[in-house]
Image 1: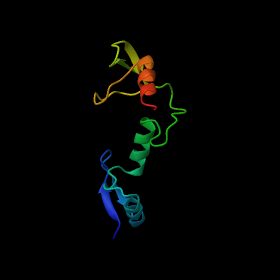
Image 2: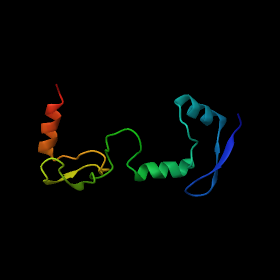
Image 3: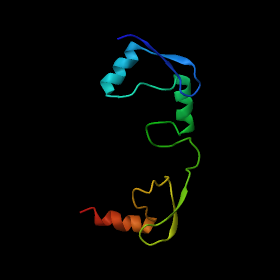
Image 4: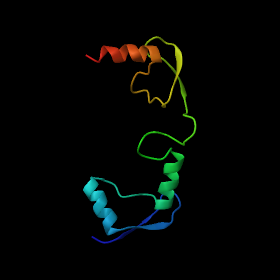
Length: 103
């Protein structure tokens, strides 16, 4: 295994994917090589709210998205962008459905 030179998808600058990094990726089971240099990865993480590890502290107010409850039809807001693959509920209907599946 040798160091690899990869061109960054964002800035186009070449960066080195070292043997140690390749081994780390292999140990973690990552299937794809990195496509961005460290600088662009760090910048992307900071614009996406820190990347990995929840919390969201220090990232400002949470962005809310307007939706229609899949159960009662009421307009509401949720802290994530719905994909359309799953139903989205208002707080009352969410609690009602959550209670149904607990037992």
